[in-house]
Amino acid sequence: MAKLVGHVGTGLGFFLIGIWHLFNHVRLHALHPNGYTSLLWFPSPKIRHLELFLIMCGTLIFLFRELFSNHHLLNSNGTIPSNHLHYLEHSCISLSLFIYAFFSMLIDKITPSLQAQNGLTNFLASIAFGQELLLFHFHSTDHMGVEGHYHWLLQIVIFVSLFTTLLGIPFPNNFLNNFVLSYSIMFQGIWLMVIGVMLWTPKYIPKGCFINLEEGFQVVRCHGHEALNRAKSLVNIEFSWYIIGTTSLVVSLYLVGFKLFTKNVEYQSLKNNFEDQEENLVDVEAQKRSELRNKFVEMGKVFATSTI
Image 1 (cartoon, rainbow, N blue to C red):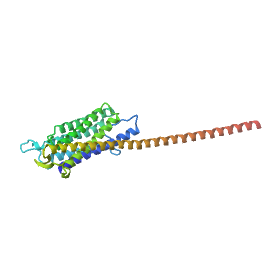
Image 2: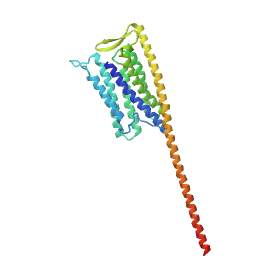
Image 3: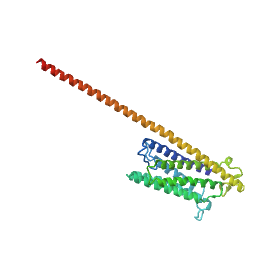
Image 4: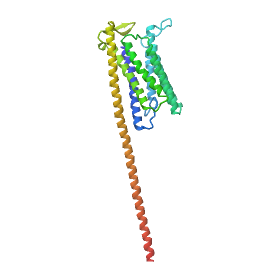
């Protein structure tokens, strides 16, 4: 149950950040198609650093939960039990994300250069994603079973996040790169939630597999290689379905969002043009009235002269 809640809670955080980034990238690209530029995080309307504050709070909660919740991290002699190593691994990932959010906020307050902010925040994020990839690749949890296969597929998504974050340093104005980065962050969240639900909900365990209690933890095991290979194939199919579904979702989000935002831009442009035309018409009419008034004055002067 703890693993289910941990994966779902963490995945929900990644998912919300990814969706928030996708929405903002589409909005900026629609409003400024020729001058698009963006940081790795987005300021909120009332609280500028709200996104970074939420990341720091979420990572701290997860960090303390992994280190101090319902277990003793160290043995009585000060050594770390082998079945507790994954707590420290998860804590390192959480701490890296906290460092990214904390220093990104300081950089925004101190550094005036947008280019320097972009490079440093992307550098910090790439360190976090790189550490996440390293720790999942050399995870202390068994990678031979179904859970390991879920984690192996997760590494592909993390690698995309790392690669696009590094590309964001030399190409901060590339919309497609930022779009793919946000998509990968969102998909990390989705896949983490899938791992939590599918691995630790008994009714979703593949046929021929079962949940086994080992050293105080629930682990999915299978009866023989045939059942294990079948379970891994089902995970591959599941991953493919989620890729297709989320890709359709984000492209639809882009198309709908781009149309809505560009429509607002066109409306504002038409409104401004109409107001300019009205002002021009008013100016022309005023000029005509002034010219007509001057003509009447000149005719009056001519008439008065001829009378004299």
